[in-house]
Image (spheres, rainbow, N blue to C red):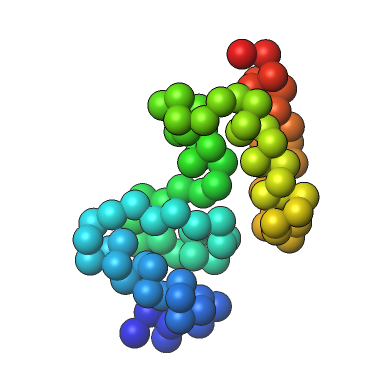
Length: 98
């Protein structure tokens, strides 16, 4: 069992990890414990900022909308998410200049 190997992971984390491993998929999470454990097990893992970057690259969201939604995510939806402020600021600046 995964949670015996890494007891900091919730049942939900363990399920996501198990499916990513079984399906050889990419795991999307901003949970640091799950992220580090997944990397140790050589599972590709990405977080919220990667998703925003990809949406900008693929032009599925406008720069203005990305700024609005990232601010909403970090300030209103989940202020405790812990996304690196300097990385968010870097994106706000970059997206504002495009």
